[in-house]
Each structure stands twice: as C-alpha cells, then as structure tokens.
Amino acid sequence: AQTVTQSQPEMSVQEAETVTLSCTYDTSENNYYLFWYKQPPSRQMILVIRQEAYKQQNATENRFSVNFQKAAKSFSLKISDSQLGDTAMYFCAFRWDYKLSFGAGTTVTVRA
Amino acid sequence: DTGVSQNPRHKITKRGQNVTFRCDPISEHNRLYWYRQTLGQGPEFLTYFQNEAQLEKSRLLSDRFSAERPKGSFSTLEIQRTEQGDSAMYLCASSPPPSGGPVLPDTQYFGPGTRLTVL
Image (cartoon, rainbow over all chains, first blue to last red; front, side):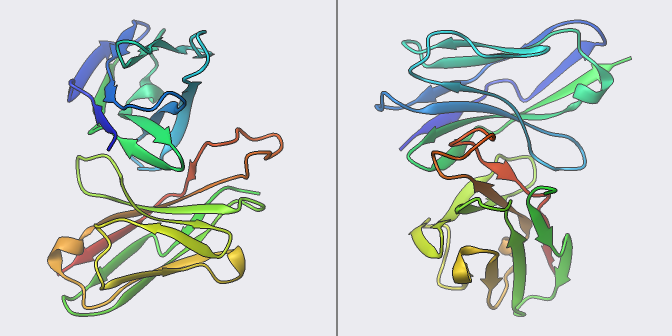
C-alpha cells in the first residue's frame, strides 16, 4: 500500500512571501506520478502541479515549483510570491496504476 | 466543456433513507473515479470505472454502496440505508485515456463534490 504523509497541518505566509509545503511517501514502485492539488474554501479540487517519477527535472508551473527527491521519497511544493487567492488546503497525492492516495493536507493561509 | 459536474451539490437525509448521486465526467474521459472526503482529511478512493466496467472497489465501499456507469458516460453512486457515518463529501473525478489529446494524461480532474449530511 502507498502512504502519503504531510507533516504540516497548517502554514501561514505573508502576501508576496514564499512558503514550502512538505510531503513524503512510501512505495516500492519505480514508475509513478506525484501531484499537488489545491482545495479552496469552495472545496473544488484543482490540480496545481504534477511530476512523473521517471523525470529528474523538477516540475514548475508559474509561481509553483516542486523539489522531487526520488531516493528520499520526498516531494515538496514551493509557492513563490504568495497571493491571497492561494489560501486553500493543499493535498499531496501519489498515483500508481490508476487510483490516487492523498495525504491529510496542509492548510495554507496567506496574510495581507 | 466545463469540467466534471456533480449533482446534487448538497443532500440532507435521515438515517435509513437511500440516496443517489450523479457524476458527469469530462467528455471523452473514459475513466471515472469516486472518492470520499471527511472533514479535514484527504480524499479516500472508493471505486473506479474504465468505460462501463467497474474495475475496483475499495474495502470502504460496504454492501450498502453501489456504483454504476451505464454506457460508459455518467455515473451514479447509491447509498442504501444511510448511516450517520456516511456523512462526508463525495467526489467524482475523471481522466482521459493514456493517449488523451491536449489534456494531461494520467491526471484526474475533480468535480465540485456532493456533500451528504445524514441526520
């Protein structure tokens, strides 16, 4: 079974600052996908960024970037230039085969 | 195409009643998934369809739960004899086949969810 651990229940960041969310996972598989999803207070789950395990290059999407350390089974998300609209619950997810396994989430609050 | 849609958005029912939720996936997405999310937790996998075939059911899905996807289009999730422990957000997601065009393959796109409250 795949397990995903997000050790930070809550994070607070000042607008325009940078925040990093941690995620670790446990798997014996070699080819898999990792995702960060954002769930704002309206509760629609939105894809933020994804990483294929076979790619060494870290994924980047505008202000969002990941630090993927395959050997350490670590997949952190960095949000740069934080905006008020980034306030949400962030979930790390692991995908092997077809289903997603999610972490418990980190609530990010961006302060004005 | 406006994404995955789910109906109803909210459902309040009394214990022991049956409820049914509907999910309409993104057009041409052949894979459809149901997840359950309780307050403050990440979603948990319930079941998965490829076209009309239900390929896996989680142990979380007791005999009171049944899901269908007739003709490989929309899907329904029915809960019979609801219990207070069934109160949760029920999320549906869809993904394209691996050769799936402009959208990211192997990525699941979620609907807004149906919030169930069992009194």
